[in-house]
Amino acid sequence: MTQNEIKQVIEIDASPEVVFSAISDAQELIQWFPDAAILEPKVGGQFKLSFLKDSKNSRMKLDRDFINEGKVLEIIQNKKLIHTRKWQAFSDFAETIVTWELEQVDNKTRLTLTHIGFTGKEQGPASLEEHNKGWSFFLNGLISYCEK
Image (cartoon, rainbow, N blue to C red):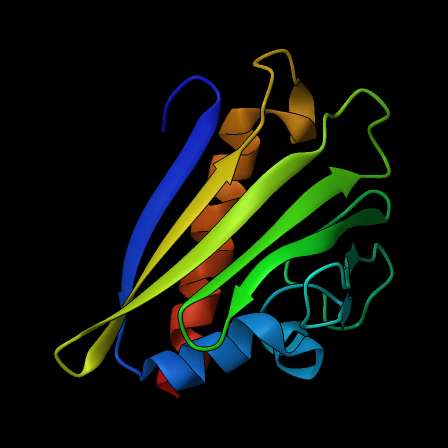
């Protein structure tokens, strides 16, 4: 992690096809990440994740709904997904870019997540530090989901 960028690398005991489906299919996303998701898997497609305060499936305790929206910038089947991300709850939160890169390593998948575009001025739940913690939490959920 640098001042304005998050980078996390994990290895998952699953094929790139399994991992890519988990990050690019809205019905799979909600099994390990948000409470609700819209993901149109094409360049320019809508990307929306909703973390809901009153969700029965919420993976964390929230004091309000958190919704982020963006557009798919690049998608390469079983290899890469890049999308923008803007939080509705934080008007001063800049639009950021999240890149998911998959690489087969032996019988596993190495996933490199990069989240760029932070200004360094974000505070509280919008801060780089909180996003880094959030990514660690949810990437562990992705590992569990894909390895089941």
